Image: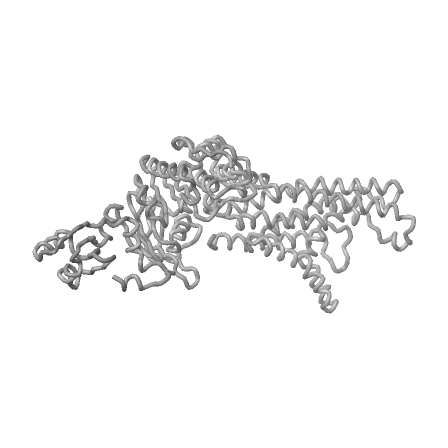
Length: 276
Length: 308
């Protein structure tokens, strides 16, 4: 171990400042950027968002000559451009859960709530900082994914679509909005459950387990319920086409924002009430 | 200043803190003493508002902790359980805590130097030894230059040099007029640092007194006597308020009489004494005596009392 010395009397602090929401935001930004696993998760999220579309575009492009007409008709340039979002959502959701549950597992939450005993400013700051970071990283990632996959496909003059074609810009930017909202939703789950494994399981259950489970219901029931599930409502934000059994982007986004706000409200009530 | 009024805390069926009232005053080091599991850490969490009391009220410097606009300037706390993200460096941990109050970055450096973590400030806190983690906790507690300093078992894991430092620091903080509240399950530690004691057992207040009074008040008067006629002396002093313990042949420990009374009785009856020594109970013994019934899980209970 390094030589550790204890020295001198305690230096005084002339300044005395009060806790403000802005200061808590600055503190949460320091927390987010000063843990290695956070930086890795964000980097992996961005790589997945860009990497999968490039891969799918390259494969589609090289296999195009061997595809049947019906197969070709099923290819959709936006599905390729946003394929990575389906994968990177898991990285963003896990990180959203982890940002809060890691404070509970390490005990950091006691330091956080001792510094900010009103507690809610910590939740608002975490949600705000993480949502902004998730969006600011996701937006260039989905834009790069779109234009790079289009560039690969353009070599064979296939599946070309303009960014300014109706609904395209909305879908691409919607991919970044989707990732941001999913991250906030997952963080709210983590704040309520306070346990990393539990938080990630809850997210996985809501997004990946319940939707296929509903397939065993009579299809009329499934079609009635399915569009209103959090996962399906959220998906409509970045889907280009909307069938009879899915919500339009506006209502879908509004519904998922509603689910997210509900999850945040539950987390906020529990955060203030529970012992730490 | 910390004031607790009829503070109680239940965890399910278990009552961890039971109708506790006390005042911790500025300018002195107040020791918070009790066996492990007696409710010290719970009381400290209640003071910080981390846990909500089932009943009662606790204020710090006149207000509930949660109501302070700048809590870190009011109370600096070190809790027994580690409260640091293992993946963050000591420096970034302190910075994140400091930023909630707009405390400048320079202050973080000052405290890292103060507690002697300069060389490891940029290393992950998860790789710290118990002692280094304790120093980081103390640095966190002192970050806001607080009027009240509350430390839960601060000497845990510190090396002798660190223990010496923390004792001096506590005395110095009290001399500066701060309220200093330090818990320990070790009497000997409190004997060296504390001026005043609050003793609890099974969540209840047992004593709220100065260290000096505590020793005098709690200790039974025991006199050690060595005599070739020990059996005769035993018969002479026997009485309802007196207990005599034969430690070994010719040596007695007599409780309930002063050395003068025993000496006089021996002289009157022509018993030879080779030794007559009043035993000063240590702080440790006084503590054991007081908390005897309040240690929840105790091995071989009852047998010791019967022997006497």
